[in-house]
Length: 268
Image (tube, rainbow, N blue to C red; front, side, top):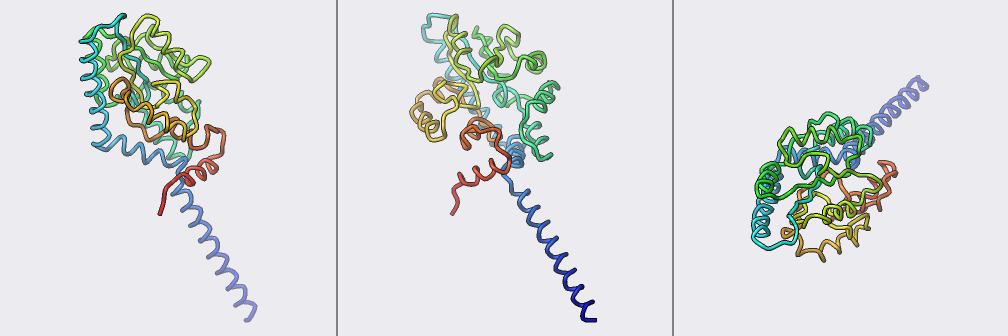
């Protein structure tokens, strides 16, 4: 009888330990910032009126500023340089899909998504760029999408009537993710009136792959440019702001990235 009671006690403790372990594991995964965090950001992007308002605000400001610039003399024809992802096209379904499957970004899944040419538009983007084109302004799309994504990217842009959506005006990533050489290509024949993007590197090379503190300092130093020459779109799902947190060590494990992110949070 004593042995039976002993074994029963061991069994109960074992079941309790297993339950506790499962609860702890579930709690850890449920509160992980990576890879699950982007789904929360995507939910805001997809459903909130505030996201739409910010995008509309950005593009209404861009139209107002463009009218000012068109009234001024310029040596060359005017052009606008714009990013694509989260600036013109909304890729939040990709972030949701990856996060709900416990995964982050990877090139293969991203190319599978862009091949669908199924991204919706960022609010305000089609109207603004059509307006700019109606004023004789050329549009150049500088993106870090790859050459293999060209056809699907053009298809996705063309289905919404984005102007100048052709091979001549689409400047894809080649040897480097830095966009300054491609901006200089445009500057050979045009004056760049505005730059539109969701990532600071869409605007100037002073932001390229810089540590977080240096990147933030450069942002404050560049304050006069925001709303004047740089039009910023909101993107809490991904970007260099995230990479800067862990010094662009993208090969860190999700657990390591999560640990770094937690260390950056302000709590009380």
